[in-house]
Image 1 (tube, helix red, strand yellow):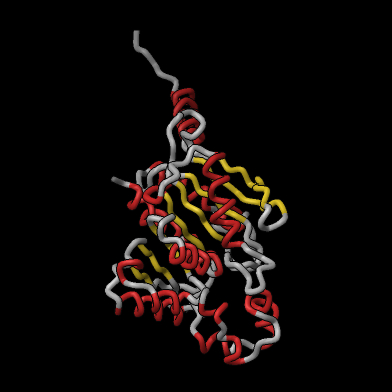
Image 2 (tube, rainbow, N blue to C red):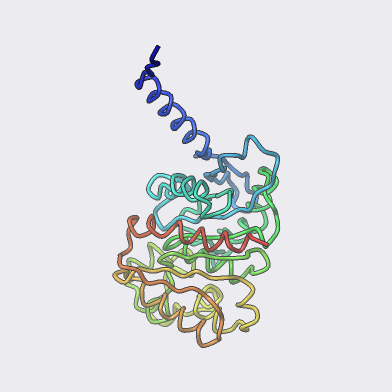
Length: 296
C-alpha cells in the first residue's frame, strides 16, 4: 500500500516550529522602569532590553548604556530606533554577544552637571544609576564588560562619560555626536542658546563670554586636547556621522584631534543625515564594535 503524506499539516508544523524559534530568540523589553535618585531629587525612568536567554539562564551579561538624543526620552531607541529588533537579529546571527541594553531618560541635561549645580546628571549616572542597574540585573559589573553608545546629544553624552570616566567603559560608540567647537558655541543664536544650553552654562551669556570654565570642562575637543594619549587610549572609540549631517564638522575635528595624538579609533562617514534611518542602519555595527571588547 502506497503511503501518502498530507502536505498541509507538515507545512503547518514547519510554520509552528519557525514561529516558536522566532519567539524564543526575542529579547524582553521593559519600557518604563525607575531609579530613585537623591542627586536628581526625583525618580528617573529607563528602558531595558534583556536578551532572549536571560530568564532561562543564570549567567551574567555585559551591558551597553544606550543614550537618547535631544527632545527624546528613554523610549526613543525603542520606539524609533527599534533597537530590540536589531539586537535580537544580531545576537541570533552571532554578530554581537548576548547583552543587556539600558536606555536612561536624561531629559535635556546633555548628560552633564550644570554650571550652578542645580542639575547633576553626570553625578547621578555614575554614582546612582549605574550601581543601581548593575545590582538589579545580572550584569558583569566590570569595565571590560561595559560599553556606552548614543546618538546626537546621546553621542555627546557617550563621549563625555567615556572621556571623563575611562575607568568605567571598555568601548564607546557615538553616532552623529553633538561635538561643537568654540566658534559654534559663541555663534549660537541667542534664542537657541537660551533654550538648549542656557541651563547648562548660563542663560545670559553671549558670544565669546560663553567660553567659560564650565564650557571647557565639558567641551569634547578641549578634553581630548588636554588629556594624554595614554589616557585617551583607555577606551576604544567608534565614531560615526553622516556626510549630510549638520554635525559633520565637529566629528571631523574629533577624528583629526585623535589622529594627531595617535589614538587608535574607528571613524565612519556614511551616506546620510541626522535621521533615524541613519541611526537604525548604524546601530548594529556600533554594538558589534562594542561587543568585540567583551571577548577575552
